[in-house]
Image 1 (tube, rainbow, N blue to C red):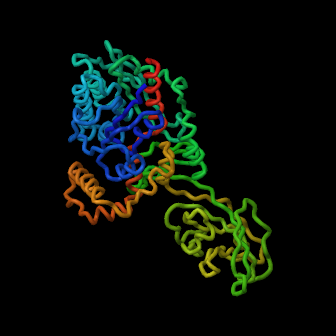
Image 2 (image 1 turned 30 degrees about the vertical axis):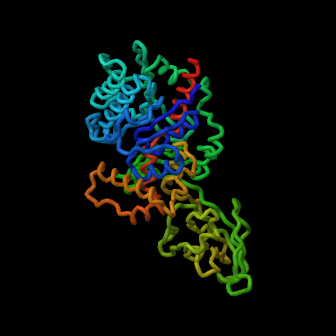
Image 3 (image 1 turned 90 degrees about the vertical axis):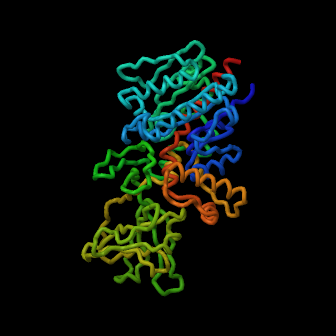
Length: 500
């Protein structure tokens, strides 16, 4: 059998081309206007051709493919959006995708594409009182039967199918949390088979039979270190959803809320993660001696306290609790505002091997003196935990709260940690600069910004360091959950193999 081919409209994070590769499908081209996702996919899949603005594409002039995928912008259909529906400026791009599909089928006498996959938010069911989803189904069916009319039910169900004379359309709502990633992400996946009746089989019958299940992609799972495990390692699997407008938050859960494109844009738009602190046994000699350096050991049990002196410089160590955080070290935080402390960046490599920022929290205080142990830069560039002669008081275990990181968002979408790494191009060629000049100009014109076009020097500088957290957050929020994509595309491969 000839290998199936795929084209991806509104490509975003490259989830559909990557899902195609995992499923045994060859991705040929993609369309996207955001520079950062294009930088990611051109690095990860350099063999995929990029076309840019969908409104400038002609389906009869591009390479024919067996499958066209498109998760058209959903902001106008989302409950979180203004609910302008298909008439909104972004969701109306759905019709551009339909145009391209019709043009390709016209040019190839109805042979390509045979399949299309549409992904969108469940808000499409209720958008404009259900009329928008009716319009979606009708427009897709009319690609094959221009006279077909779809009745609108009182309420659209989460799954359904339509059988035509020689084609089929089916849809189903997936929640990513049941497909191997700890994220609540409900999305509609709609499949159209313009050459047969397999749409329902692909969405409702292919699990396990197609070789894919929620626990499959074993080789890919090894690469991602196991999505759920990697999230637990990073956050101890405790996540709570934050509301940026007030102080409400949902109960602590092991399942993260839906990854949104607003993460990283300020205003506490992303969920918080609660991480356990780490205890370290800090042993050091008196300041000024030959061996004035600490030996730091991670420990879950507090060691026996030293009581060898009545002044800080004569103590032989203590226990420091270090929280792993992402970003800049916290400053002036402690259990008592009068005796605050901080950790300087110079100290960080000693206590945090992974390179994340460390925040030291004292665990012992004197029963008589009104002060707390502190972390000081002066003590041989390491943490100094001071124990006094009086019996110490042990504070309660502490935790830190931090925001979900871009890498954790990648894991929540089922992608490997390195998907957005090593994106730099130190010495771009003239061809590289021409390509990116067109990318940035296309983006500028589509977005409608009044800024000037980027100069070649600006493009060269960006290519040397194209990554930013905000751009990566946005990409993941607008992206797809990879396990769901692989399930659908593997189902298409399975269905075509059954026919043979």
